[in-house]
Length: 96
Image (cartoon, rainbow, N blue to C red; front, side, top):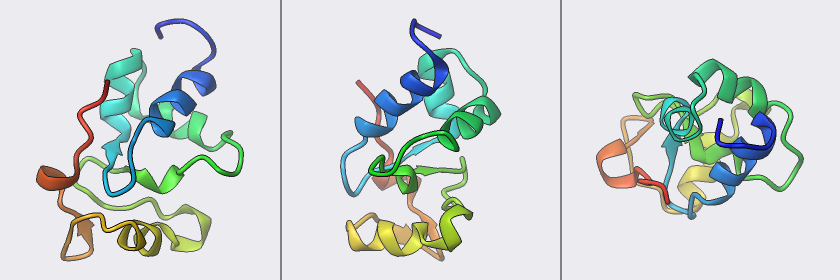
């Protein structure tokens, strides 16, 4: 981690992802020196209003938490999708 708590670091990374783009758990982990599972655990502690749906699995599969609403929210933001997954080539947020 680069400083601060893991949850704070993850929150900052997630908030930096613009609408219509995504990052994978692993990509966020690489940016803050944490594993993908640690990122997922930290995400479960984020407050309402943090765009959790913009964090996906490495293959573009949306998160299944929150009643499976991630796909609907991603589509509403115009995130490029292909066969039920995010088109990572087109939607990947490269970070800061």
